Each structure stands twice: as C-alpha cells, then as structure tokens.
Length: 544
Ligand code: ACM
Image (tube, rainbow, N blue to C red; front, side, top):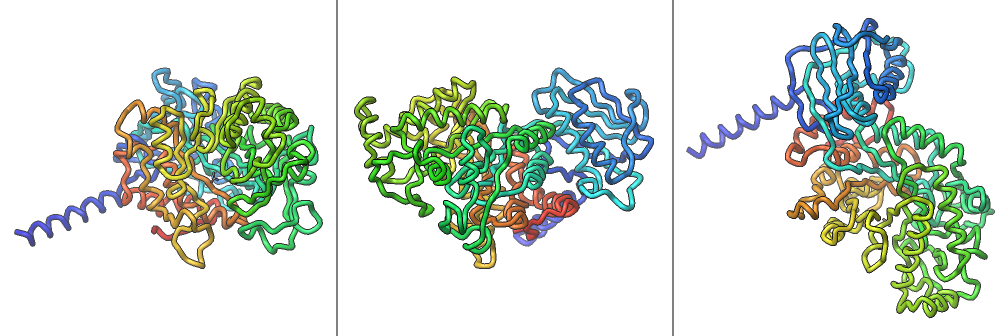
C-alpha cells in the first residue's frame, strides 16, 4: 500500500511539474488570473492599434519604442475589432491599476481604467513576446514577426505601494543607471522608487539655496572635507575621490521618465542623523557650536546629527523641503529618522534650552518634537511624511496619513499595523537586497541581516502574522532596499538586486494564495532571466 502511495505521489509531482513546464504563463509578477488558450497571435508590420483612451497612449508609446528598436517598425493606427489589431479600450468598471488582456489568434484586446492599468497590460503583453523585445540596443537583424501565446488575463495588484529603494548616497549612481533601475522596476509592476539621496557619505541633490551641500557634501576622499574612510569599505581604494550629485534638471528628467512608467518617486532626505555630509557643509546652521556631545553612529561615523535645538535647523530644513516640493510632485517626502546615535544632543546647550521651553523630559521627547515640527513644515508645503519606523515607535504626534517603513524585522511592521499606523513592510531579513545571497567570502553584500537568497525573499508574506482584516488594511505595501555600502559598481548593484526583485514584485503584486516557489522558479529562472540578459543586466543566476 505504502509503495503504491509513493508511486502515486511521484507520478502526481511529475504531472504537476510537466504542466508547469508546459505553461505559457511566463509573466512576473504572476497575474491574478491567467487562462492559457490554444492558439497564438502573430504581431507583424501589418498589425495596427486602436485606442479610445488618451490614458493608453503612454503605454502604446512604450511598446512602439521597443518595437522600433527590435522589429524596425511601429504599429499604425487602425479601427477597433478588425483582425490583426491591438485594441486599447477604457473600461470604467476596472479599478486603478487593474487591467484585462485577451490574446486570441486574430486580435489582442486590452482593457484598463488608468494610465497604470494600460501600462501594466502592455508590459504583461511584452513579457509574452521573445525576451529580445526588452533589449535597449537597436537590432542589426530586426525580427519581423512576434508570436504571443493566446491567453486571457485578469489582473490587479495586491498592495497599493510596491517599492524599491536605491541608495545613491553611499555610492553615486549615474542618471542613466537610475533611469534603467526605474525602467526595470516598472517592467515588474513596482510603482514607488524610493530615492535615498542623502546620508553621511554624500549629499546628492542640488539645493540652489545651499550650494555647499553639493560643493562640499557630494565629494569624499583625499583633499575634500569628507576625507575619512567610511566603514565599511566604499567604492574603490580609500584614497580615491568619490563624487557626484543630481542637478535639479536631471531630477526633473528622472521624475518625468518615472511618471511615464507609472512610477512615483519618493525622495528621501535622511535627517536628523545620517547627516554628516550636510553638517560638514553647513556646521554653523546645523550644529550647536557649544555642543560637547561626542558620539558615533552604528556605522562608526562621528557627530553626524543635525541639532534639534537650533532655530536655524528648522529654517534650513524648511527651505530644503520647499525646493524638494518643486522637484518631486509625489504627495509624500521621506525624512529618514533612522538610527539617531546614542549620545547625540546630550550635551547641546541649544537642545537643553529647547527641553526647558518645550518641557521635554528626555532625548526621546526631543526626537518626537523634531519630527512633529517637521510634520508641520511638510503640512505647510502640502506634503505628507514617510519615515523609518523609529519615528513612530513612541508617542510622536504626527498626522494619521504618515507612513512608516518597518525595516527591523516583520514584527516591527506587525506592531505598527496593530496600532493602526500606516506601514510599508521592508523587513531586512527578507527584503534588504544589499545582504549576501549566501554566506560566503566570495559573495558581495552585507552579512548583518542575511544571508537572504531568492527563495528566502520569495517566502515573505507581509500579512502572514495578522488575522484581523482591519489591521491588514494598515499595510500599505512592501519595499525592497538596495543600500550601497557594499555595492560599489552598477554591476554589483544589479547582481544584488536581481533576481531578488522578481521575488519582491510577486510579493507586492500577486495574491498570496496564487504564489508558489516552483512555479515562480520556472518563470524567474527561465524567461525572467532571459529578459534580464537581453537588457545586459548582471544578475545572480543560480536558482537558490
Ligand atoms: C536603515 O536600514 N537604517 C533604515
């Protein structure tokens, strides 16, 4: 009996995996509903498109740009419903970001009710095409026809915010790289680019009112005011100059590029700690000259914290917020708030005076005061706050729509959600992609929260430890983080990011009950990898 059971089980496993192998669903993240059909559509230079929705044009252009490079032609406009046409139709009953995609032998029909919905339908369609469609280099041998398997898809995201953070402060990344990073996010239906623009090691955003922030704060190494070698080792040899910042024009260009891909850009100005570059540029505005506090951050950076007792601090930061709002239309600004070192402010006469006038009992209350003031500043400029979890662990009186990013483990996010705080889940143990995949001296990456291989990341379910639907509703989304202390080059950054961003996209988008590692593995390490390769994106290619 036992033997039969084992044989039966083995056969079942074979059948299931054969079925998975044979599946035409190669889309990442996995759509909510995918029904394979038994035919295919052939796109060629006679294929037309029709659209009744201006909201779709952005997505059409995205497809056209890729077609022009790889096929050497664009779709022409045509009539709805005729053979060999892609119809982009507005459907007012579909929710934000939702779409349907029907591929049959004679036509393709896309329905959506938003720019994002049309865009996501289009990237799903492009994922059904030969991975070559994703190449950014003009093809020498244009491919004339493109086959897409017939299918019927209904799709919508699990979470509203599907984010990825790139740390451009520890190491600077070029405008071209940032754009590519955003484009790849968009290909996987991630919609929030969290841009870590300032930290101890560099201030990377041009602020017209305070030019020294970039003249002094965007350079480190020999002959600069930031000559110290940070821990851990940064880009290249310690005696090499490291520099770079984004001009306001470049930032506008990147924000517009992201908007075309339905990606919002969340700028992070990390204060009051992690601010060595800023306090080095403007010590007279940001540090109390009589402060005798001496402290080092967890990353071993000394005296890196903006003084919360100085009036000039708040004037300075309001001016920064003002300029940031002219560059970033997104309703939220991230103000950091992580890892204020023990000992900071403890011997600042300015903070002491503040404590007396505001009746603050301890340094924690000073921190709460600082963020309450910052929230008022944001409100004056019509923005809301995102911050790291530390900012709301106490009784800070922030507006209800403040969002915190819980990074110190899943429990921190669950705790915040149970307090009905809006929270984005980014537990370091699963979603910090600067951690090593596997523990090995040959692998790039940090070790403090990892190792985290692609399967570990994939196994994360943000609501697994929450049963109450109301509490689940506090979870706004998920976020991967690519810190760059250990990502000195673009190739290493990409290696750390991919394929783990595949995992993130599926956690963020696909219904939990539809998620399955074996099926994911087939898509990720099959067509998913090929799509990366056709874009010459470095990645880790073992399915562990
Ligand atoms: C963090 O990792 N310090 C937010």
